[in-house]
Amino acid sequence: MHHDHLDRLESESIFIMREAFAKFDNMAMLWSIGKDSTAMLWLARKAFFGHVPFPLVHIDTSYKIPSMIEYRDRLAREWNLQLVVGMNKAVLEEGRTYPNGRATRVECCGWLKKDGLQQVIEHYGYTGVIVGVRRDEDATRAKERYFSPRNANMEWNASDQPPEFWNQFKTDFAPGTHIRIHPLLHWTELNVWEYIEREKMPVIPLYFDDGTGHRFRSLGCAPTPSQCLIRSSFNVTRSAWPRSSIGL
Image 1: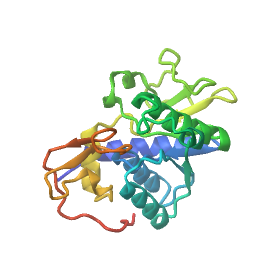
Image 2 (image 1 turned 180 degrees about the vertical axis):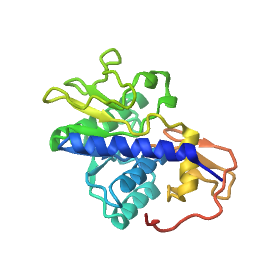
Image 3 (image 1 turned 90 degrees about the vertical axis):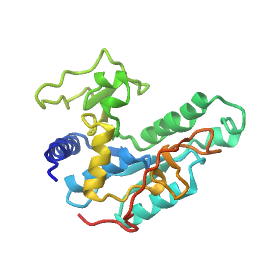
Image 4 (image 1 turned 135 degrees about the vertical axis):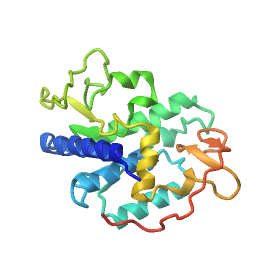
């Protein structure tokens, strides 16, 4: 089966990653361990010939499913990744979280994920962060750019985005500007799954039927499966699951 559309998607994403690496001195990639960011990691290894020349940042809320952390650490060892784990320890020590009943889900996610990421960015001084967002995730994503500037509070302003025509990207920004880079912006969720299947990519098995007729539709925190995780009854299986990394 021909997958010319996947080749085009892959080529553009690799170009964006290489362009970002050439333009930004201190850059990192956000790795949530989910399918999108793992596909993005796979693309980064292709872009730089099996080596990822920038750190992978994972924001650990302390409520992740244990197998997600095991998968993260195994892949980091096998692929020789520079892994930076961020955690908002102050909020966790104070117990201001949703599972403790002292925060809403939105507040908990904001403090543990958004603020946790900002702490890492400020600590290491990252001027650019590669993120795996797609335009088909939400209507507001349609206004995103591949190279998207943030303000001093790292907030996105949809009305203050540079034009991007014919693969001409603005990469020269005022000193101190924080940039988010979106190599998967032109992908759809179906494209990601097609690419995973074509590349035989070792994504985490939680997405697939575990023999009970259930799988996880999306991954996040898991105080209990009914809280921060969405569980789906779709019967999706994968016959040949790779138990070790696949060379490029």
